[in-house]
Length: 124
Image (cartoon, rainbow, N blue to C red):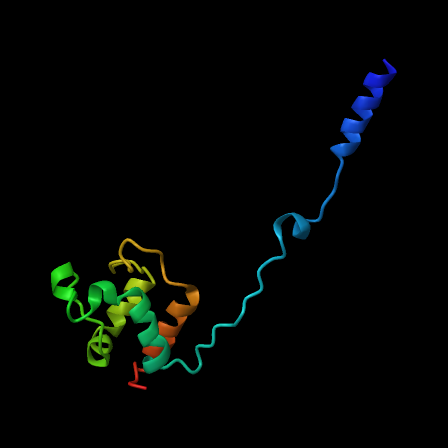
């Protein structure tokens, strides 16, 4: 009887182990950088976002064959479609949500496109 009681006490004490959330799940991720939309440029940020997320369907060679129809490969095409691009990546009502079949762009990428569009979509 004494042995059973000792075993129960050991199980209870072993079950009372405490760990901090950081030790169990790791430290929360710290963002490596902040989203700076003040200096958003077409030639750097916007072009990079488009290359990574849009050109598989909206390049000059794939737009017609994929059925997308809208080209986003060069500045002139992007400028003429900038309002439509912004509405689509924001997944706003009345716009076709983009990227189609993919994950929504990051808030930072959307903010960069919005800032660039708000500045008049300059060719910078």
